[in-house]
Amino acid sequence: MSAYEVLVSNITQSFLDHGYEAMTMSKLAKYCNITRRGLYHHFSSKEEAFQAMVRQNNQRTRQGSLSEGTRLFSAGADVLDIVTAVLDVRYGDTRRKLVLSPFALEVNDYAFRLCRPEMVEAATVFQADFAALLKQVMANGQLTLRPSISVETLVQLLCDGARGTNQSFFAPSPEEITARYRQMSQAILFGCAEPVKL
Image 1 (spheres, rainbow, N blue to C red):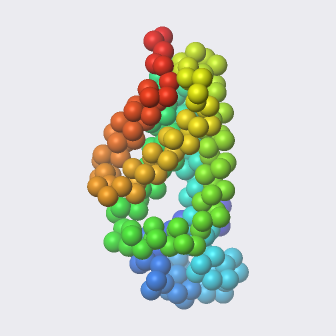
Image 2: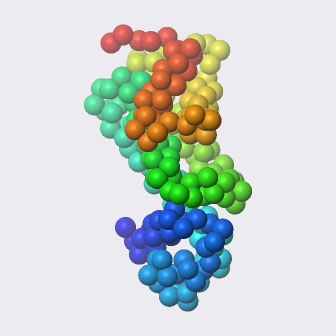
């Protein structure tokens, strides 16, 4: 990791440990073991630092999820395993970190308030990449969509389902997240596609 990535990782942990509202740039610098001047060199406000945290997390989980999905596809895994793994890394990794924070609701709330453009951009890029991966799965004969369903629609449903799982009233515990994504993915996949027996 670069020095900047390490700094943003420290910023992430600081917001998870201490929340957003009570945070100041002075406190953030202290928690990150950097001078205020050093912190201001990178960010003009705690809002900018928070947005950098969200951007870096989105980039990390997007890349990690697609790498894991590609690895499983290359290893001959079935479509449900591939989809579950992609969603679990993309959305589950963040959720598992967040639920351990005493400031989980506050951090989640500020992510939606302050980082909507970053979140929309990340979702757009991720969903396009996820659709490309599923097109490879389809080309390999592992998935056949019904004529009324496009791969982009399927990806939107799967991502909406994963985000909904994370925000559900009875949110899963960290240990249950993967299983919930799998159940949700199975329901969506086989309501939209015909299972292929290899």
